[in-house]
Length: 124
Image (spheres, one colour):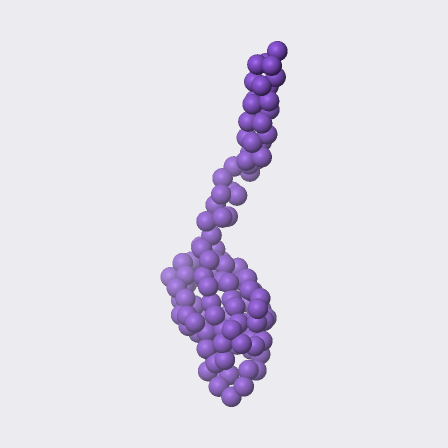
C-alpha cells in the first residue's frame, strides 16, 4: 500500500511539473524570451552607445537608463517617444519596418549642450 501511495505521489508531482511548463501557444513564448535587448545610457549631453544597428523586421527592446536627471528619448520618424528618469529603466520596443538611418534625440531640456544629445539607429 505504501508503495502504491509513493508511486501515486511521484506521478502526481511529475504531472504538475509538466502542466506548469505546458505552453498551449507552441513556441511563441520561447521566441519572445529570445528578443534582443539593447542597453542605452543617457547622461548629460550624450547617449551611450550613440549608434545602434538593427535589422528590418526584427523586434528589439531598448532598455534606457539615465545616470543623472530626467531625459527624453524620441525617434520622430518611427513615431517613438519616451521619458527616461534616473533610477528607472525605460523599455522601448522597436520593430523597424523599413531600412534607413533614424536619428534619436533627447527632447527634455537638460542644460547647455542639450542640443548635441542625439544618436542614430541604422536599420539594414
